[in-house]
Length: 93
Image (cartoon, rainbow, N blue to C red; front, side, top):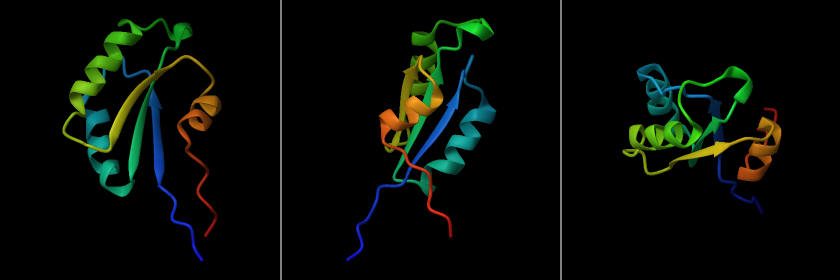
């Protein structure tokens, strides 16, 4: 018996702000996965121009037309965020 797994992809970045290039990648990736999670990193070391909550809100507005795309802010290591959202490494072919 094979167990079906939800294919989850994570697209991390600072999205300071989200651009047409980011949105193009999201538009192309969204149909390939059951869930696409946009991880908006706090990245205080980069000195973002926009606060995290605004970057998250702008990203949500930009991808609202995709029902399986979710936007989350995070301030942890990327590996911890990926584990938190339930994404796993794809098995080798």
